[in-house]
Length: 275
Image (cartoon, rainbow, N blue to C red):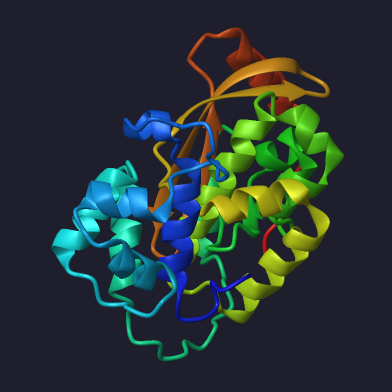
């Protein structure tokens, strides 16, 4: 994971975000002899009102205790949104690194009952995007939503997912950014190292997105699906935090053609699987 597992996560994040910001977006002339796609270090320093030497020390991990004023200036210059700015602050003020004992993620019986009561495709995922439980509608909707699958692995490595998600490229960007946010400071946990290593070896698309260091939180929204049986579907996807687990629900607008198709799908559903 490059230097993300070490002490210089702040520097890695600054480099990645600097590389994504073009001079034009920053209000600077590109110039004829530019050899880097993003901003130069000295340009970021100038816009943030700090010395180029100090900014270089931040990127190289030789100064890991910037003031809040400096962090806010860097967030402004790098044009970070609220989630990205909060992530930057967290990297500059890391928590004590007491090793947490990894607990097996289990779904309590009451959440299995909740899943069974939901008429739309619904499933529960853990912090690493493992599917831990799903209702019958979800498994009929897509076999890749059955417990035991990993949503990030399926999206990146299963060719059927590329056909299933009409906006696959955007979905990959969103999923990887959501995954990084879910991990927070714990990118060096064994499960995270294993999954990121596997996907980095198997998927150039994952390597590209992971290097961008994007972070985001889920806000819900519309999703377009090309279902192998039902055809085009216009759905909404919502995520709800339930303690350390996340409930994910796909649903359609009432009385829409997609809602009718989902009702047809329910007639094919089999009893749900439990983890």
